[in-house]
Image (cartoon, rainbow, N blue to C red; front, side, top):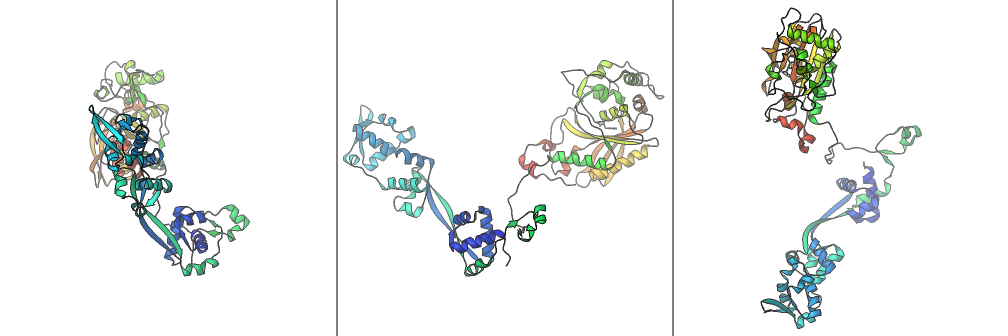
Length: 499
Ligand SMILES: N[C@@H](Cc1ccccc1)C(=O)O
């Protein structure tokens, strides 16, 4: 018969005791309660011991009861004062009683016959009686003493003195069910106990055990992987964070280089101007972006770059006529919370890129909107670009399709013509999701030469921006986008990222 270490130990102790209260067995084995219970149940299943359970109704003191046990019941406190003064008013009793004890006191003293009550000048006067003078311990006093002494007393025993109902009515005691467990050894157990060999049990095989050869002497603990255990909630990544990290990994595995930046604040220069978005473009007004109040302005990059961007806007580059206005550096210096991740693509192109090269970034971006279950004013975008001498529009569509399939698990992809100031041609992409239907996924295009040339790049750059929050909602099984940032502990614990 296969016995665990705990079962062996429990059996040996039980053989010494033959029959024991469960708590006693816990003390004797030195194991914790859960372990002993498991061992006892194990021994019982193997026919070596028997567990008896008996529930019993018991009474214990309430907080009020504990107080009375210490300072005496209200009627006794009142009687003591009466014995001293013979005659008291209700007001006098305030010396020894609290407000809520005062109310029922007349009734209590009368019921015991300890005092007589009369009215004098509109005041209640209590006077001690013969019975009050000779009053002795009553059953209820005995019950209170017993409870104070023992902590818990079976209902049966208390009822020999007073009805439990009475204790409950006076808020002295309360009733409870306790289960008493006794464990008894079976003849089969008695026979086996002297034969069991209690070896040291280990649950981890260490290098020391192997080197010293001690592994030969110990017993390895068997784990019952099906045993029910309490649920634990170890620290883990916030679900939305886990989702974003997963996408980051995917892209890195696909050979993309990550673009990062510390600040969420951007100059309009990088958010708009460097992307050839004209300064009078409607998306630059307050309705579509936030602006920083303090400080209002930041710094422009090196002069040469600024000059080239200004040139592109005013007169055009690469055969373009530009926007044909006077470009304002002050306007470009204004600070704002980044409104799209494409700002980082611009920065990277200006810094210089490997050709061929593939880049991506995951950024928190901000746009004014009315909050509801599908709209947040801050959300996340993945932007990226591929730069290579031989790239064309078909490559862009191919890459986007692969993204939609790999990242979103889309079955079908749809492209529609679109417009962005910084791409030409531009497309809008939708992915078909079995459960969500057609989901707008993001925008893409080939960066305009007015932009790439001004930033110093001579090769075609295909670029895209993807909103990933709706996808996150789907992967996390939520239908309210605000949950992505929820404090709801239950959700944080249980949310599952289905990939
Ligand atoms: N930045 C655009 C998306 C985009 C990125 C790159 C190229 C084209 C479009 C947006 O926020 O919607």
